[in-house]
Length: 115
Length: 115
Image (tube, rainbow over all chains, first blue to last red; front, top):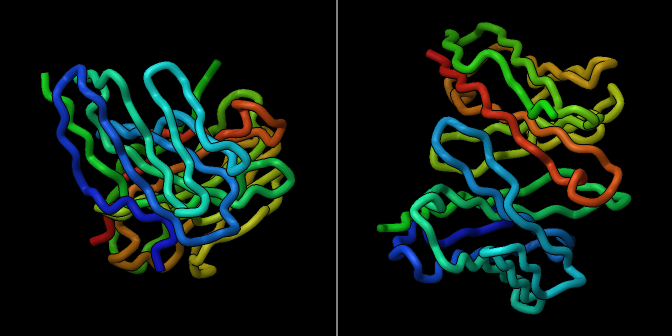
């Protein structure tokens, strides 16, 4: 039973355009959501996160939107750059005492930004 | 500031053998989590160690065990290796003090191949 789903295995966009990566979850106990990006031969790198009490969090070119009623979140990258090409993982956590415990990951979306 | 390091980078074992993977946490982090990432999948939580005690476990059999040392480094031990244990093993460190440091920061991983 996959509790975090990324239904698009891959996405291709032009440099300068917006990239939108989507993620759905089924477990209503999740209260914290994160995006990681992963380059080949490296571990996942933390990108941005959002608590379930918010519906938007922005950090530079990266914005995460959370729709709790739909159990859906998305990551927007504007403008997209070739260096953004990587696998993006959506992850969710049911926090304990304010700290991230077990992260449940989706299968990832491979983003390719074409020059 | 030193990031999360893991050793070895790659490892080849045969079915039935035992393996030990090592992780050094990021400076200032006292919590270590281990994940298994099979090919084409997202990372799956194995267990977490906090102050040398297991702090929670995912859906992995007892032949997956771990240790955390007083300097917060950690080991993952897998006994009676099976072919399905072939995967990238990721270590992540964090510190439950709130803020950005609360996030889990990953090492580059150990690629284990079981023949």
